[in-house]
Structure formats: C-alpha cells, structure tokens
Image 1 (cartoon, rainbow over the protein chains, first blue to last red):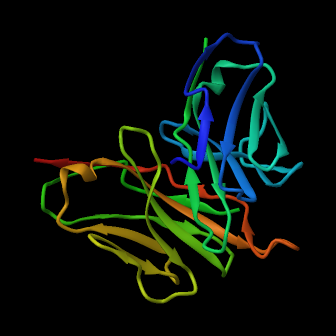
Image 2: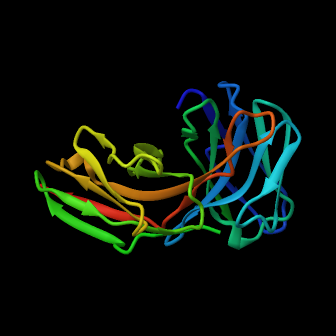
Amino acid sequence: DAGITQSPRHKVTETGTPVTLRCHQTENHRYMYWYRQDPGHGLRLIHYSYGVKDTDKGEVSDGYSVSRSKTEDFLLTLESATSSQTSVYFCAISGGTDYGYTFGSGTRLTVV
Amino acid sequence: AQTVTQSQPEMSVQEAETVTLSCTYDTSENNYYLFWYKQPPSRQMILVIRQEAYKQQNATENRFSVNFQKAAKSFSLKISDSQLGDTAMYFCAFMKHVKREGSGGGADGLTFGKGTHLIIQP
C-alpha cells in the first residue's frame, strides 16, 4: 500500500549483529505495529505504538526494542540477532474511526 | 488474553465451488471486531471482510460472507463461486476495542489465527 513502506525488503545478517527495520507511513495514523510471521504461527504482535514515544510490548517482545520519535516512523531493532529471529516482519498502521489496518509489504530477515 | 483458532491448516476445492473456512475465538471482551485477511503468494495482507461484534447482521462483501455466531464465538468465512485468484493463506483475526484517553478510540493490535491455506483447483 502506498501509505506505508518498509525497508529493507530483504536482509541477511549474521548472528550477534544489530539489525534495524524501518516502517514509514504517510497517513498520519496514530497507531503503528510490528508483527512477525512464522510458518504455523500466523502473525504475532511484537511491539506497538500509540503515539510519538509511546510504545508497548506485544506477545513476542523478547529480544526486540522499538522507537518512535516521529509520527511517520516506527523502528524495530534486534540488538543482537539470533537464528530464532529469522522471520518475515510486517509493519501495520491504524487510525481514524473505522479501526482498519493497513499492512506494509513485509521484510524477510534471515539470520545466519 | 484472546486466542483465535483456525482448525483447517489446508483446504482444496474446485473452481466455482463454495468453500467455508472456520474460525473460533476465545475472549471475555464484549466489544470487539473480527477480520478475515487474505495473503496471496505476494505476501501482501489484504482485508477481506470485517465484522463488528455489536452488529447482529453478518457482513458481506461480494462473494465473501461471514457467519458470525457471537454466543458460540465462531466466525466462519464463506467464499462463493471460488476463483483461481482466491488461492491464498487466509487469516482470521480478533481485535478488542480499547478506548484511549484523548484519542477518540484505538486498539492494541490484532490477534491472528495460524491461518488456512486455501487452494482453488482449475
């Protein structure tokens, strides 16, 4: 969707290295989310944000941190990547009165 | 915490047939929303249909309709006249309504089921 972009789209990194994924929105939505998708698990919430500098943990937050210094950007950081963090990561935004969600195209992260 | 269960990991039907995907959920909330998302091989998450829990009428979007049974906590998706382009992963999702001070409304995110891989055969 044109209102939300994720970068990078693919990344391969080594175990123990820090990794930052970026989510950028142009919709001025209040809420932003990071999910991971793994086979057999569907999508699981990592962290979410309900405003600038306001974030909270989701179901699978261990090993991840987030930051939101501007309305449009929500960063997901893996401080020291592990093989168990190999996954597809989705960002989503939500706002307005219809409680709809818009998802980014996903980032495939491989930790070797 | 909410849980969403999709009991059919994979389904396969012939083109033009009708298929029903099942979803059950568990929650103590009374005010919530339910969704069906489609994920084709492109990986994009596409909203198929949405249901507000306070609405008794089942949602319909063209060939897609739901059977929402609030007391049974069931939310199945029916696809009529299935097409080859319907081949995808389908995810059922739950969202509780959370009102945040000063926000006018908001949510803590979606809880997803594990998905059903739907294959439409020519």
